Amino acid sequence: MAGALVSTSCTDLTEHPYDFLTDETLDFTDPQTIAEMSGNVYSFMRSTYWAYYGMWDWNEDASDLHLFPSRIGVGWGDYYIAYHKHQFSPSLDNINYVIWYHSYVAIMYANQCLGNQTFRESNPEAVAELRTLRAFLYYILFDSYRNIPLLPEEDQPAGFLPEQEKPEVTFKYICDELEAAEADLPETNHFGYPTKAMAWMTLAKMHLNYYAWFADKEPYDEGDKSHYEEALKWADKVIKCGRYSLSPNYKDNHRVDLSNNQEVIFALNMEAGQASGSYLANANLPSFGTAAFGFSGGWNGGCGIPQFIDTYAHRSATPSRTNHMTGVEYLDTRFYDTWAYGQQYLYGSSDRVKLDKASVDEQGPVDVFYTKEVHSVDTPGAYMLEGYRYVKSEIQANSYHAAADDTPIFRLADAYFIAAECALRLGGSKTLPEYSEQKAADLVTAVRERAFRDTDPSLARRTVADLKGGSVYDYGVREYTAGASGNAEIDAAEPKSPAFTYEEVWDDPLFVKTLEGGADIQLGGLLDDLAWEFVGEFHRRQDLIRFQCGNGQNVWNGKSWFSKRKEEKGVMYKNLYPICVTNMESNIKLVQNPGYPGRDATSEE
Image 1 (cartoon, one colour):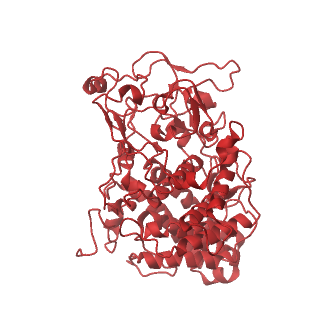
Image 2 (cartoon, one colour):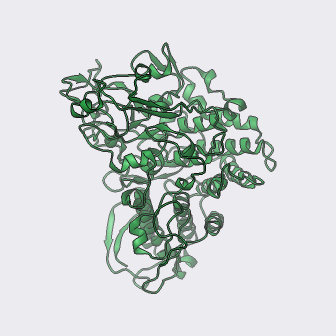
Image 3 (tube, rainbow, N blue to C red):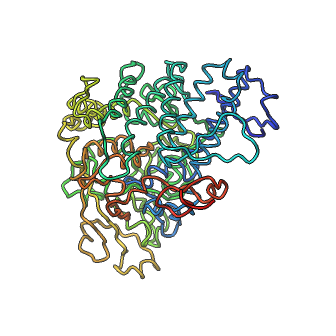
């Protein structure tokens, strides 16, 4: 085998090239060799998350929280518009190829070690580490595609093509692997590496999503709800193990260095120049806005969806649809930890020097002031200063961006929410009776307390009725195809960026809207809390598929937001992404996921 092998040391992520490596030329009893071999698994897993069109775009940009619109005068759009509109297609290779490719390459590197008898006999801890990582990568693939191959550990003859396994078999395989590996995983928090708690969290996720994953009709058939009991069992182990605690401050979970964070259970270990990842600071901020954070760069792409921004608890003298300009106090301080909004100021200036730009959307000199409302995703798109900008990951001054930030995958708050959701769906656990519905409300409240500690502590309290009630999200299409003149053709030719509010244009025929709301969403209050706590943490697509509307559709398919339209009842195939055409062409045994064009189970090879 030839490849670039990467050390997995917490302090040394330097790449080391090796050529023509085989089982005969590798010493599988040497710790350094094992570190270098397993390092490829971590390297490609980082790319699964942080390559362009990877896990962040997969889970967040297709959701109701964030989007990358076409930026008038800048660009963007392309694949990201398809994400937002849920116009998924096998031919959009960049969307469908990245996660499949990087995850399977990582799995193949894991298999190279795990298929070696010497390695399996002499390195039980390393075996457990790689089995857990491999199972975790299969969990990502299973969630995204469901119908996936399980690659054999042993060498295969030339020309071997893997076939997809039945989802029931893959589900059992992932769970069995995690449970088998767990015994040899460390109990203490070994930062960036699998621990027992990391395996428990993955098992909890597997069982939490079981009914949504295996649904073939609406509403989901939850049967005896035993998988919720199983998910609760694993989340409870995390909560009770005593090795993790909630961070005093929300922002502490999104610092550059998370190695000493007591809430983070598993994270991707990043290091500047050697193992970098997040591109979000550049992707969201414009070049003339990065000075507010003390760095240069900026591509001016993404922003928050206004309907989501309006859900944060706030105090304002005006209705929520008009609160983006002045007079707003956000009582949920997670808003301030997550979004750059309004007037921007020069970083480090004691007298708050306003940032301005010589020309924005041909308006001439203006202040750098991010407005909440956004015109549309592509008709005509977003103007230069439209939309609040996602800045949740710490941006250090005098750096290029936040690419060296460690990436939290699982944290204790997540375990709290899994336990709470299971208790609510069960109406109280039978196997762990302490997890009543009231316990669920207490767990969510415990997570919320730090967000309201310095504003209005009484708002941290969530009741059972709050969590089981509807969502406060104002679901429906919100697409304003006009600009300054009210004439879409004129504005497309001569872009302007006037500040406007949804209320001001509500009756304009060029403002497209549907009124759907969130009152009919089951456990809608809990879904809202998941958004406020975990926005940008690779959660949202999975959560929207799991939660259901009153008509039985899940929120992912059954609700509209911004420029994305809801699906007709019965359309469920978009719960899965298509297998990209490149993979289909390279393996004639692959069958396309139902609902997408391409080779299906009845096609001739």
